[in-house]
Length: 97
Image (tube, rainbow, N blue to C red; front, side, top):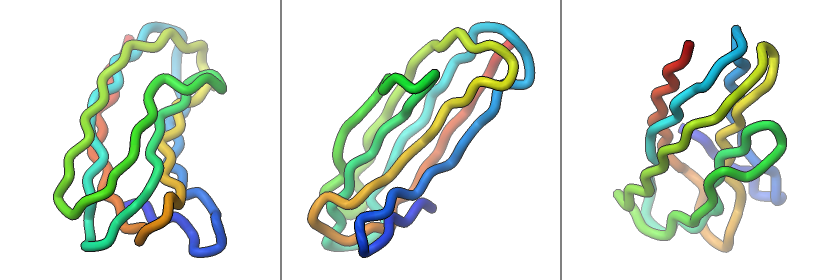
């Protein structure tokens, strides 16, 4: 569960690549409370590779991407405020070299 702050803070989950290679990133963000309104995104190598909003309880917002990373580079799953409540589920599977 990712929860953005009421003062505008983002909540992030960070994956750090253990080795060079191409990684498959697949999953979804899910509205986890009534009145939700959040921005969701996935960032790799400081570039947005997916962005959307979650605006309803139980709303499922899927994503899938392939990303070439060097060891030590990151993928960041992020949830930020967008006019509503903040509890947001995240399911992600990362497979790689």
